[in-house]
Length: 401
Image (tube, rainbow, N blue to C red; front, top):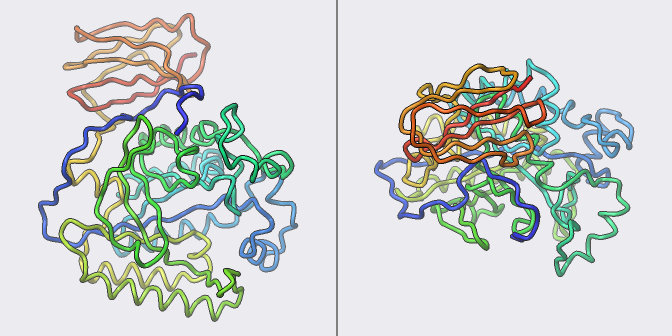
């Protein structure tokens, strides 16, 4: 990943201590990740089929930066999570920034997401680079640093009308949503990885074939950063023929998804103690064939697998990083404030003040249990206090009025 770009401050630890992954329990570990697509490329065959042919939306309803696609699929998201809850299944909900933007517009939806996360589901990130048919409009390409294959995508960048900003702009939607629900985003499935992966993502997933169904948490290094990698197998509702063309026949696609599910079931007993089974599908897959995914949830429930979010599974090992928004040992007052904030707590090693853009404003080593920060020279708005306490991270939201 290029590090000459403007450095945006990280909410999570970038360089993590790498140690052997150990699993103390003899059980079968499974995660299920759900991808929320941007749905902005009108050439995508399945998007055309659902949005235009089935629902009658006009062809320009997605391209113009509207959130029509997210509005269409939100009821399916709610039904999917409710179905998962009924079988005690936990999901890693990997949102592209458009869905985060959509949820942020409605307090009721924020509260619903908060309930999901409190119930064990995970707020994660999904992103397709400019090289993908469903590019959501965000990329770190063409920001001043050239890459050898940029020429392949320059026309799309300049002339498609899809571009919305860089990856910090994209991640800000996820970050703002996480702050609203006292959470953090550390897991993602990010394509064009070496260019577009936000630094905050430390658990990365990828893969699609049955060979990717089972993996062992492993470390992967990019320049100046290390992260953990898990693979997953796609359980999708889209069958592609020998020419890699999407077949739009529902009967063919349902049969394909059913056969895929059967193969996943057959492989459960192949899991070793140090391995994790990973499955991924899209919200529009659930929209099309909810019975397939209900069957998946039932199967894992009946087999009493250890199903958690990706962050939850990684925290069971010694690879987890503690990022806590709910630590009551740190007191910050008054909040909201009109100038001064007081910070009080024991065993604080460091305090950092961060603005809504993720930029570091102040950084202080702490030798006392109480200190004062003066915000009078800063613009009014939302800030975050990040405290390092006993080698864990505590983050508090501050309103400067």
